[in-house]
Image 1: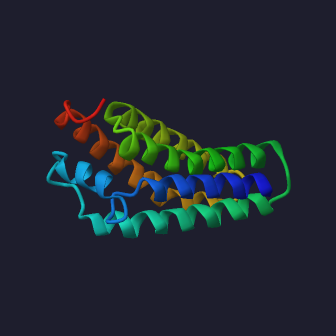
Image 2: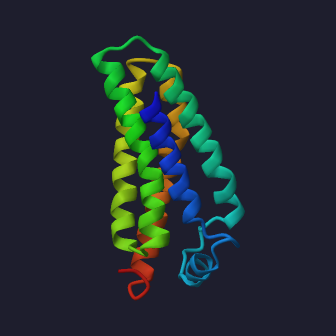
Length: 158
């Protein structure tokens, strides 16, 4: 359980460290200057959606951890932990390192891994699987958004 807490905490710290808000003016200015597609939600939507998704993922992960140890349960827990870690890693790539291409690829990988998480968790705990479905849905949208931002900002990302 200590490793789980460490991983979740590290992901949260990375995400917070890279937030494009008033506490990080350089990141905020860079993000505001990006050309973004018309379907980009307002910043407040991101601020509301991600905590809700992370809470749902935490509930699902908790449920998985409470199930009896098995190969399937361990695979679902590994996928859950990996997806949780990728959230913080993506924010590091996109906001801190400004790697638009790499972050678009990472978003696609998160989408694929999230879909596998849902399928794997469904064999262990259906409720845990359901808690990850909104995350996967948001990742589908976020991957499209990340790719459009990458495409429309070739000079602003590495």
